[in-house]
Length: 352
Image (cartoon, rainbow, N blue to C red; front, side):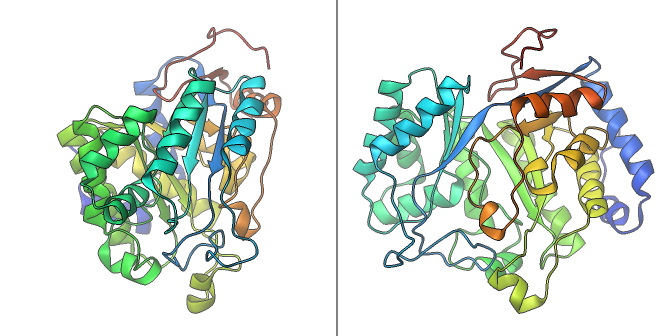
């Protein structure tokens, strides 16, 4: 089958029929995953600090070090959060934070070792590429050495956060103090070479053009051709409420239709990615359910805790029972998975 070209993808985003795209994307999902199961994961997003020096225009979460709302979680607090997750059957944490200029590498190493000592079965999915680049500069180490040190301490896989749009023009507008598009990709390339799997993300619907949105997808597809290290792709619309970026450009959140169209085109364009997640945390669980018919094969995370999107005022919360019901009502059997998209319960089991 011929690949979708970047020009064709732009045309589909601009003028493609939403429902035809949905049908095509859904057919592709069914081709890859013909069975009745659709998956999700139970994890917790632990933001170890909100202190950050990057000052991204789209972020309401970060604080300067002298802000009264600034924090750094202590080891006891982090372990307590993980204990709560484990008690609910969770198996993974998403560990991310701001670019804190006052924390030493030893602090991160101690944190990871404590997590693995107390919870050896918990998968640590942590430190997005901008954090890795920050560590590299802050500690005077190569990206490879940073990754090796963190992996030795307990880091397993890397999330795709901080990608936003992989266009340096866009990044100069929305996050000029964060890593470049090439640096983001270089971290992922290095991680893949070291045998670490990662995810890829896209935050769209702000200052990027459709061509730049597709440029982002093309750069991901090209790297996946080389490394085959990405496990999944997750896209969500920019949440503008109260952000500097929205105030500067008068931006509003992308429509549900724009989200579903972008998801469908992503499924058709990213032909070397196995999994696409629904973004119910930003869109709401009902839209997440529809996303299972527009190119997503996975409902994403139950996410017991989420702070970054919530800082814009967008707060969707559901129980695991409710999440499973959304998947069932879409016509599928819900199943818990791990970070590698392996089902960790019986496919016909429905206990939640």
